[in-house]
Structures are given as C-alpha cells and as structure tokens.
Amino acid sequence: MTTTTNQAFELREPRVPDDYAQMAEVLTVCHPDWPVSAADLEREDMSRDPSMFHTRVLAEQGGKVVGVAGFSHDDRSFEEWRYWGGVNVHPDARRQGIGAALYDELMRRATARGARELRAGSSDQPNDAAGRAFLENRGFVQAWERYESRLDTRTLEPARLDALLAGVQDSGVQLKSLTELAADPDRDRKLWELDWLLFQDVPMGTAFTKKTQEQWVKEELDDPRLAPELSFVAVRPGADDPMTGDYVGYSTLGRSEPGVYFIGMTGVLRQERGRGIARALKAAAMRALQGAGGGVIKTFNDPPNVAMLAMNAALGFERTATRYRYELTLDGDPT
Image 1 (cartoon, helix red, strand yellow):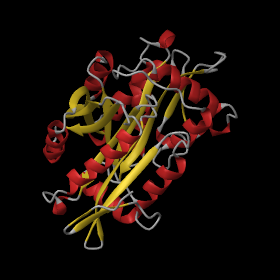
Image 2 (cartoon, one colour):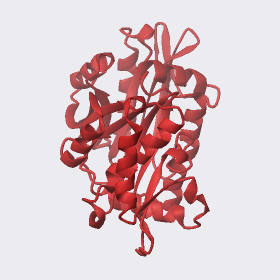
Image 3 (cartoon, helix red, strand yellow):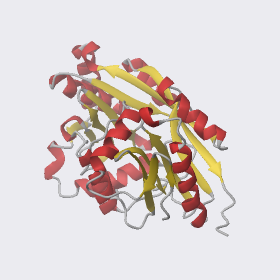
C-alpha cells in the first residue's frame, strides 16, 4: 500500500500485536455498547477462517491510532465477491477527512478484488447518526433491519421462570447447560449440526453458509465471551437423530461487558416447536443468571420472526434499538 499523508494524519498497515490496544480503544469509543479489548482483537485474528479474505488499515495522528477500517468476506453468507466491513474514527479526530481517506483506501482494495457487494452495519441510535449519513452519502442503502431488545433479569419473578421450566421438563425434555454436557464426546458435533439446521430458519434476508465443524467450534464454543454455564441445550432422551442425536434445541448467552449478556442463538427443531421449549431455554438462562447475581440480556430479532418477537415481549424484553444492514452494489470489474 502507498502511504497516504494528509497534513496531520497518515494511513498505514496495522502492526500487531502492538496496535491492538489502540485499535480496541477506537472501536470501543465508537461502539460503546460493544466494547472490545486488545485480547478480543487478537483472538479474532487468530480464529479467523484462513480461507476468507480480510484486510485492515489504520489512521495515525500525532503518533496515536485514531481510525480503524477494514473489510472481510461475509463468512455467514459467503460469496467470493461479497464483503462486510466498516470505518471507525475516534470522535476527537472526526471532521478532518480521516474517515473519507480510510473509506477511499478500502474502496481501492475492494475494487482491486472485483468486489460486487459491500455490507456494513449501523443503528438508529444517536451516536450512529454520523455513521448512517456517511454510508448513505456514499450510496449505501438500508437492506435489512434487526430489532434489539433488552431485559433485566433482576426484575423477573423467579417463580414464573420456574413454572416455565417445569412445564417443559414434565414433557420429558431435559434442559442441560453446555457445562453439564461437556462430558458428552459428541456434544460439539451435535451442536454444530443443530446450529446449522436452526440458522436456516432465521429470516435474515440472506442465504447462509455452513462453516466447517472446526471453524464453528473455534468461533462459537471456544469464544471466551460464551457463558457455558448460562447456555442451555434441550435434550430429549431416546431421540437418535443422525445429525443432532438427542439435542432438539439450544440457546446461548455471551458476555458483552460486565453485567450485560447477549443471546447468540435460540432455536428448536421444527418437529419440536409449539411445545414451549424455546421459551423454557430462555427461562433457564435467565434463572441461571439470576442465581449468579443477575444482569441485563440483549437479544436481536428480525421483523419477519413474529413468533420470537412475541415470545420475547411476553418474557419481558423491551425494544431498545433498530440495527441496519447497509449494502452497496459495485460493478465488480477490477479494471
């Protein structure tokens, strides 16, 4: 890359691991509801699928990293020509052309690769207003919405959660945490297959790509943010599906920051739906979190997923934000 200098800042390649701490600082101040650490960024780089393209560029001003930008293949909806990325500039360094310079460099790289579609995320929150305008001014359009909702488990009546759990357990389904299932030698494979089946029913307006078991385990089960003691699997003893065995549903909780958790996946096999299992899986996580001192849970759902939205509302989740997937279509001609 040719270094670009614009008065008080320059663009350069990352120097890792030395830059991780400053990169994390920029990303966290830009997205305070999803803080990241240097360790998070290093693990992300180490666990990334090596078959997927990834690039990153930094903006430095006065010897300090003030901008982080990059894009990668969209590994959940892979096409060789489709990428997901973003531009992040520290609020103290904005309105100096840094974001535009980072974006232009990303576009140069994307064009050189023959990219045909770029994706980026934003939300309707006030701190994202500048980011939405930045994308829209460059031709990105809103292609999809996701609703974010939150619930504080300290406001829930334990007896109500216990009743939800008892109803499912009386039907023969057992709810076991990932920690309790650690001794199952086939746990990871069954969860990998279950996750793939469930994800295909998530209405996210895109076609999904199945990851290898090794990659999925590395990104999901080995993620240090995962709380295995708060993540539950619905087990039906005697079931013997060739792909999922006796696992018929599951729900995971991860930690986004102290006292705040997020639901990664909640789903139940089609033949097991309508029996209150998904609700009980969430109730099990809430009950376990209450036992650990309580906390806030964030969940994300798509507008077509009417049943899950209604379930979450009944459990006490309240809508807090709308998150957008922006898309930009390119001609894909690297010349």
